[in-house]
Image (cartoon, rainbow, N blue to C red; front, side, top):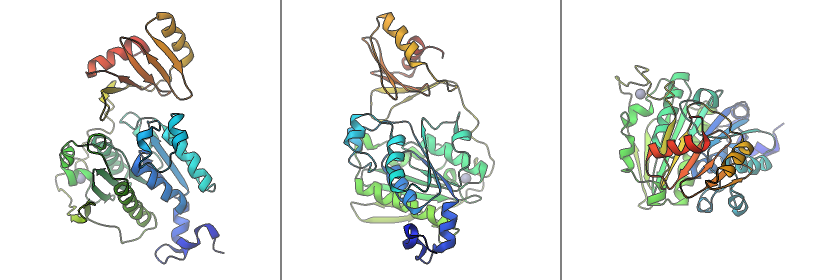
Length: 342
Ligand SMILES: [Zn+2]
């Protein structure tokens, strides 16, 4: 018997009953739950991918609502973590699949854990460093992944399959940021129709890969949506690629010490401790309150501190966003002084 829920997909000749069964047995990680992640997660959940894991470190904000289709005003008002809001919305749409939220930062220190078990990874991140990490993980574990990037009205997508050209073959090592000349969605804006198009292209490729289709696109695609340009780009293996040929990884397995990363579009740094440790919000609140250095508020998903010398938001996994901070060193020293343990 054809299950009613997926009948339109099963009647579709390139998926069928067998393809649908394959989807239901698949685990897909959606890395990043912003604009691309929302659209991709929505389509994958409704298509019946049996196990979806969502990774994101951010809380819903008002400026997200223009394009991040799984969130609403109440989520922004409550500053709900995107991964929890997304799971709630999508579990209501499909209660038959397993949804797994990971509220945190994907980095070299935890990639082996939080990407494990994936049959495919959808890249919906907003930075090249995480893409290089995903690429190395996928090369090492022979897992396919689908890249997607957007800014303004320009988008790019490509699928990377085990044994084929990898992301590093495509971009050259460490130089991919040049493609968008340092522009980001925070500074150049982004069309919500573009993010929907790119994420849907990514999902289409993901569905082909998961169902074993041989119609997977073998080139990369650049699109300029406002100008109606869709330009295929060559995707060829670099016979001397440091990643997929020589397996000399730059990120994977190289979890360096505590990192402070500039937060895109803001005067802030994110500090990620070298080892994940769960801060005790209540005892920290007590200590900081007694110090007289500023005000402390503990919310459901974070601790907020604001004082004349420092202000930051600390999350349950130990990372913190340090605001009004100009240098990496200053961010780390604020973390040490106020949170401790670096
Ligand atoms: Zn390569």
